[in-house]
Image (cartoon, rainbow, N blue to C red):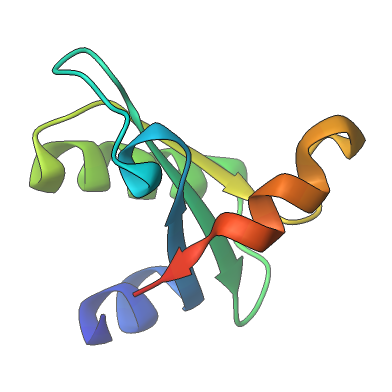
Length: 83
């Protein structure tokens, strides 16, 4: 986590979705909710998403609280597991 804080200004990161609920398959992506200490640009955001995909050896769907769609916001915030 120190690397993520230092390199990408990550304040918190949590997992949600099928991987968090134990309902994933080998084809499932990993849904991650991230909050930053300070704003980062689009390229740095994509770089972080690619880095996490490489480390986890799975496709990662990285999202911020602000970007959550209203239809799923409550469910995501209820089930997210912060690491």
